[in-house]
Length: 349
Image (tube, rainbow, N blue to C red; front, side, top):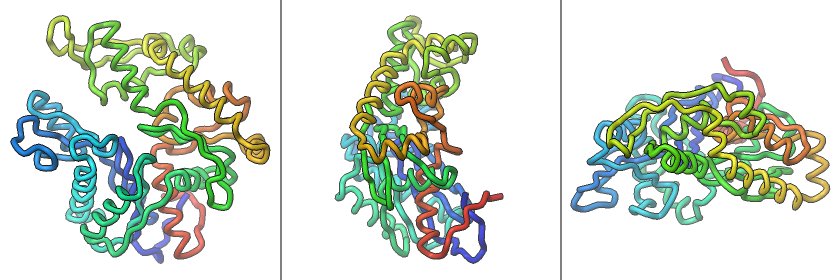
C-alpha cells in the first residue's frame, strides 16, 4: 500500500474516470471522491444535449429516483449518444470544481487520468483539456491495464496474469517491464451482467428493476458457480421494483438460486472466453501465471465465487485483490508518487 509521508506534495491526483464510477485518489490522503458516472437528463428540455443535464453523480441518482417521470439517467462514458463526449467533459469538470470548492483537493493539482478502455485518442485529449480548464497545473493519462496491474502489485508483489472486470469490458492481460505483453477482451462486462438480471426479472416475474437495483442484487445474492448456488440457496434479498402487472411500486424478495440461474448462461460464456484467451497466451506468460497465479480486480471481482469460476476455467491459483474497486486508481497514484521519490509499500493508517 501507499505510505503517507508528509514530504509528498498533496496536489498529485489520480482520477479513474470509469464507466460506472469516477474516483479521485491521492497518495497522501487516499480516496477523496467516489461518484457514479451518470447524469440526470431533463426529458423535456427544449435544447437537449449538454443543456438538458441538470445534475451529475450521487445528486443525479437521487434526483432521478425522486422524479423518474421527468428525468432519465445517461452514462456519458458508455456510448456516443446524447452528445456524450460533451457530457463526459462537463461531468469531469463538475466533479473537479465541486472537489476544489469543498477543499477536498487543492487548486492547481497535477492530474493523471485513467480512462475507460473504449476511449480513443481524441476523447482522451478533450478530457485532458478539461482538467487544464478546471485549473490543473498539468494533466496526462495512463493506460488502464498498466494502472490495474500496478494497483494489483501493491498487494501482490509478483502479479501473474490480471483480469480486470470492468463495467463495459472485462479484460485479461499480462504486463512485463511496464509494457502490455498480452491483452484480450473477454465476453462481457459488469453492465452486461446487470442487464441480464434486469431482463431475467422482467421475463420471469414481470418486474422492472433499475440498474442500481440490479447491481445490488448481483453483489448481495448473485453467485458465479453452480456449487455456490447450492451453498447459498437460502440467501435472499428484498428488492424495490415496479410491478408491471399492477403498475405499482412493490417489494419483492429474490433468492440467490434464482439470480444465479439467470446469470448462468452469461457466466458460461465468460468461462469459455477466459479459456480461449488463456489458450492464446504464450509459454513464457503461462509459466509466469503458474508461478504467481491470476489476480482479479474491478467491480465484477465482487461477485461471489468469481475466483472459483476463473480457477475452474484455468486450473491456476486465483485471488481477488484487496479493494478491487479502487485497484486501478491506486495504481495510477502509485505511479505518480514513484516518479517523485522511491515508493514505500506500507499499509496506510
